[in-house]
Image (cartoon, rainbow, N blue to C red; front, side, top):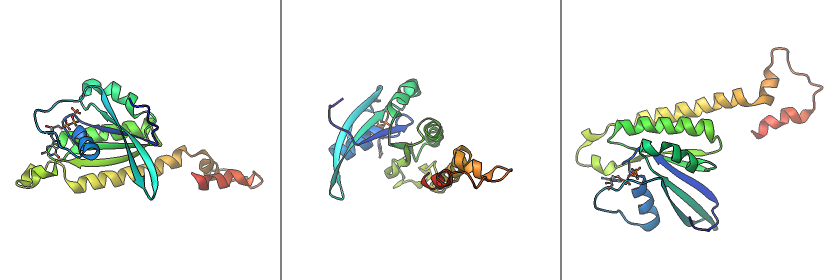
Length: 185
Ligand SMILES: Nc1nc2c(ncn2[C@@H]2O[C@H](COP(=O)(O)OP(=O)(O)OP(=O)(O)O)[C@@H](O)[C@H]2O)c(=O)[nH]1
């Protein structure tokens, strides 16, 4: 791993063969590697500095191996990640099932990690739309359900808010800050 300072740790997750490495290669090195498929072993790291509104932001991207054989290792790589790009292949429905697995896992172990869903291999549909196995609307519905689920879970986990809704009412003599703090969540 390079000694470069990283501002944002990003982890690539998803079933094997969905195209995680290809996506990173394309973004970082502007190339698409032809030739036989080589599965990632463990994980690969690459850093990329980009300019955002005049500010340099260095992304540290961990490209994990999708094979379930390396699942335990992937957990090491998503630890502390600010963003997870969870990929699925639009022509492989099982890869979308795997997305659900990773989303659940991230939600329970890395609550501050933003999750981005990414469908790959759209080019394969260009000549044959029947190859599509993952419907875009299903993905959107899933993402929206997760959003509302998060709202409900925040409600359950957020203690000050629970205090306000206790059946025995709210003690208004309590310090104001307790109630104000819920606005910062
Ligand atoms: N047609 C098409 N093929 C792709 C695309 N992206 C990746 N592939 C091919 O899909 C295969 C798997 O790609 P990888 O990028 O190695 O997949 P991966 O998700 O990193 O796989 P693991 O390392 O095993 O987790 C390779 O043969 C790629 O050439 C794409 O957008 N379109």
